[in-house]
Each structure stands twice: as C-alpha cells, then as structure tokens.
Image: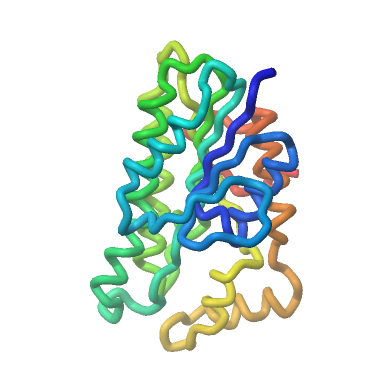
Length: 243
C-alpha cells in the first residue's frame, strides 16, 4: 500500500498542531519540526530550533527515513512563524527583527529548497503549502516586520510555482491565509498596548464576540484544499472563501 506523508513546521501548537493531528487522523505519516514537543501527540515530533540549529541536517534526516518508492502523496506545510515584537519599526530590537525574518522567510526557503531537491524525481502528488496572512497585503501599524515577511512568503509561493512549470513531475506550491484564529499569537496581540498597536481594540472586540476561527476547523479546510486539489499552483487564497 502506498503511503501519504506530511512534513510540517511548528506542529506542536496552534494551527500546526491541529493540522498535524488532522492529517494523521486521515492516515498520513506526519513529521513535525518544532521548538517545543507536545505530550501524547500521535505523530513524530522532532525538537529543533529552526532559527539556530542546522536545518539541513535535521530535515535531510527526516527525508532519509521516507521510502519514496511507496509514497502516493507528500505535502510540506511551512507553518512555523512569529509575529515578533509589536511597535513601530524604529522601536523594535535589531535581534528581534533578525529572528522574525529568519523564522518567517529564511527557514521556509531553506526547507523548501531541500524538499524540492529531494523529491524532484518522485512521481506522485507533491504539494507545498505556505501559511500566509492577510498582513501580507494589508499593512498594519506596529507589524512592519511581520507584514514584510508574509509578503515575501506570497512571492515565494508564486516564484516556486513559476519555476516548477514544465517540469515532468512538478511540485505544486500554494499559499493560505487562515484568517484570525484562536492561537497564542492572538493572545499576544490582545495584550499589546494601544501605543504600540493602534488596532488592538479591534482584535479584543473580535475575541469578545467569539469571532476567532477554531484551529480544528482551519485544519479541516486546509486538508480538504490540499487533498482535493482545489487551488492552482502559485495562488495564495483566503481560507474564508472556501467551505
């Protein structure tokens, strides 16, 4: 029997955890790379600091475990990310800028490069899903580094799709904007002062009105988009537009 494989970054918490659980529930072999490790999770967890550790070694070791002769579908989800410090750019510590850019842009580029190289001759369904954000297209005061990083991820999605055109066994690359989801990132936003983030009251109100999306529902929609091939390569879509 052919296997289905998911490799995901940041699979121990939030959307990543929900995705890893849902793919595993639907008979995928799941590998999660994250800084923390959750308890009693039904998938393989690799504890790694994606910013500081040697990603080439860690990611290659995962790929070497996979018997590609028995793979029917393989998906990479670049999910790990950070909002970073909130505030006008001139108030953000330089080291925090560096950490956000590395995790949100450099790590996905590096991992995706390794992924495409390793599976380029594999003749099966091959998909890369980049978790984007509405902040990629809508500037927010106080989020300049985060907005910039997510805009870069959208261009990464388009560029990879362009590079894969005409390949014998192309890798599909799509982006997804999950919307406002009940995660730790939203807690960070709500706990920010209005001085650092002018729109904080909007996010507090959304939480109070129970308007945040549930991570499990988000995971279910993303899984459906992936396995039913609902989005064209190179596109980044808003999850709210899909049922």
